[in-house]
Image: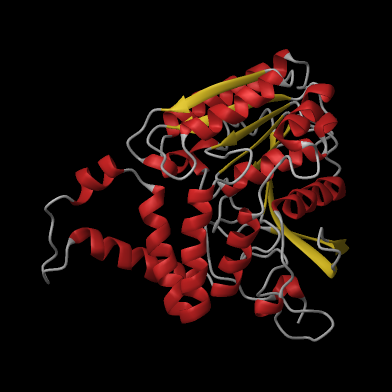
Amino acid sequence: MPEHKQPRPPLGTGRLEFAPLGPFPLESGIVLPALTVAYRHDGPPPAEAPQVIAVHALTGSADAAGDWWAPLIGEDLALDTRRVGVLCANLLGGRYGTTGPTSRDPESGQPYGAAFPSLTTRDQARAIWALADALGIQRVVLLTGGSLGGMVALEAAVERPVSVTRVMPIASPASIGPLAQAWNHVQLELIDRLGVAGLALARQIAMTTYRSESDFDVRFSGRIESDGTPSVVSYLEHQGDKLVERFDPDTYRALVAAMDTHDVGRGRGGVAGAMAILAAAGTRLTGLGIQDDILYGPAQVRAMVAAASAAGVDATYRELRSTKGHDAFLVEWTQLATLLREALGQADAAGGSEPA
């Protein structure tokens, strides 16, 4: 059965296309025999309008306009698809159509499963550029994403800075911090020891890092379900069950492990060296932090912006004011719309709005 015909769990509208991109070399030296990338493109093609790339977070799909950023992408919205084309790809190693652990290995005919090669965020960034090349996208006026998506967006910008007018990582640092690695370690240990049950528990742990203390207090303080279970426990169990219904342990492991590799300065002379690459190309950077984000908080994003400024990048710090914590980039539509319009406006002023 061809890879792109494999059944996938539903997420969003399911309106996706599939690009077979051939053999794909990874940083590890392993070559994937055949890479397929699932994507969605909205708005005008690259020959007719500026292009934006949005990158999804850990368990997302390419259906940004039909799912996780639906209030922001479309006619008269922040990413106005009358004026710009918007591309989102399912990340390399993902669950929703791009080659990953649930894909069939062409050599064995069986799903890769736990044998799928280790990935880095740099591998994932390069896969996005391979798709952009196939679609004829030579320049991007805005490259953005949240959490893991922001890490990949930053890597993609440093990988091809002359092709990017502005990069806007959201709730994403220049390199993963030890506290986030610690949470990831516990999650992966649960999956390795308990399989699907471990995936549900890993999701429960993750959900406690995606929101803020104040959000949990408002939603759950003193609340008990009819069976006597604290409402916060019921909520976490529900979130774990929901992920198990649409995801799988091997994919979760592959994506979290890729996140653990994130360090934009690796092999580039540190963060300063990576930012100097952006500066030399004139690529601008907006670092968007989130109030009360305990996973990749404002201090980490400010440090990235400071390093960029010190290297000569035209860099700006912005912050989402929210009680929702890390997940605010999937909730605070009004603020996000303003910031995306600002980023596109600055891209226009920089002369990046002309079609490729």
